[in-house]
Length: 451
Image (cartoon, rainbow, N blue to C red; front, side, top):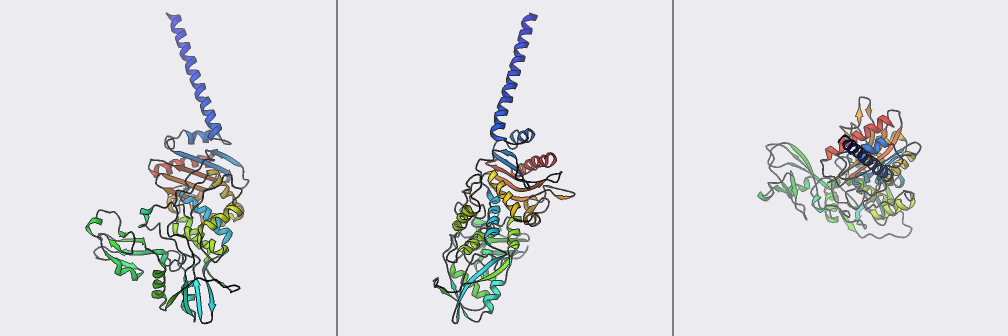
């Protein structure tokens, strides 16, 4: 009996050892596939995380100074980048725009000044305001004519149509004014909010009964500039995009400038001198675009880049094509890039592509300037409660969030003083985004400690 029990225990021991060997072998195979060129402890943190295990995860880490690849976990797979795509838009602006935004273009023909848009979004913008174009047009002695040049559609490819009502998805256009949004300032006890620009006041009405179950403060009609305000029970400020058109633009300009503006057909003349009016310094736009993830500024940035490539049209695809051919041809994987903001789920990027872009930025822009443009841990947006200690931030970067998507790309300063470029991508998660953020910080905190 004892002998049988001995052999039974021996058999079970061999079985457990064999199973352990099998598990080790399976982990080694996974490590070979998904955790290349990196420490085993970091692979285990990512691959065995109970928070990260049910969705697509990719992580790429590189030394920003040397370009040495330190870790890659599924970093050759394609992910929806969301707003981390704005880093590509930043790179385009740095290469194509120069030091200042092109505010508008114009020609003078006898007693007439014909002007057209470059995509500059800052004219009377609520957060990045410029009066350069306003003052220029107001003071010119000539008669003013506005020329409508070919431009992309108001909405980008793959955008969610039902986000038309929200501040983060204004329409694109060649000559934006007021950021293509209406601002509402509500006070408790007041029947109507203050509306800016005031020209839209007549288009505002109390919400009908069918709208009252909505959580929005303001709801715009889908296809027209009619705005319905919910009952005002407390103070609030809100923004709602308005529908754009050349006729509305000229009406808003005339109302603002207090002088007539007539339409003019677009027609370039051979050897005619085309002037460009300089606008704000570029960093004022880059900083807000990145730190608060302003989609409108990012989209208009690619249109301004297109205007630098040629004055005949504003075409996002032309900017993207030029950047991919001239400056991004050496990325490890061909990016699928369709818009400037990352609103589109048609964008697809690999984590190692994003890290390579971060290396290019670090090589071409002074570190002080570069980090000042990015969101800082403890300071901006979704990073304001993360990635900092009593000495300040230890991560600078750009987040990207859509439904079931949360990514972070940027730079991490280790406790040894080493600056790392990283891209940490999460797609198709069903957990709360807050849980994903905390788990990412847990992983990156270990990178900070141990690398």
